[in-house]
Image (tube, rainbow, N blue to C red; front, side):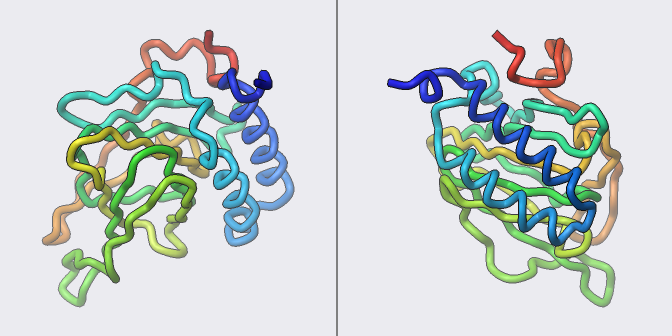
Length: 201
């Protein structure tokens, strides 16, 4: 068996290097998402690289672990770990993002405001399966609610955002349109000695 399939670092390291080239090449969101999507698809096509320490569920809520933060703040890579039945409120991101399913399944429902300013489901909910990728952004649709689609298993998705998402002020919404600001941080922030997973033991 090759070293590539038995150690977590090479796959993520290659992804980060390729994504860095993408963001350096163009700031155009459509081009960036188009070029980054197949890179994330390639990363989540293999479930052999994420360390167990960054794949642990919390009994009460989902966990968000930082895998890589671009030194220039242009993007971040995060693992979202969902315990059975866990999910998010309606929320936004304020920057472009890509969501790649690594393990299990995730159900996402996009929302849009109606004429009264209330949030209503927009289109059908989408079930994301391993290897699949979807995009969000203020341009193409930025408000959604996500949950683990499996009632008895952990699910894990890999998210890429156009900023250090754990430091970005975003919003949680109620269906009547009320908004509450929040900054998500990271579950591993206290232990994060490096901005990259590649340097973790």
